[in-house]
Length: 128
Image (cartoon, rainbow, N blue to C red; front, side, top):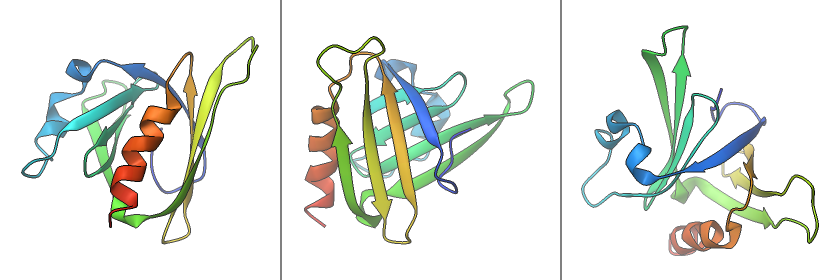
């Protein structure tokens, strides 16, 4: 389950933007676009040019979904951790601390350019 109400670790795998659930696009404001997308087994996490949107798929059928949005303007600080040189299970991590005190830790599995995601977040956090 992905939500912004606890400090759990999210094991995320990158997905193509065209695989982002179409219903999340209905939440976009004018000029908003998806920049990166990830998934767990059923849930998705989308980084847009305005915010982070988590889609929590619920129930046995998966028809019920919870959408949680956290604007970049609410991020107080963040950190990225790159993968090591020779790791059996390479992963990278992103730590976000929001102005309400909540901290989220995202763990990205496999080869993923965490620096690119860090630049995306920097662009929006540092210009607020």
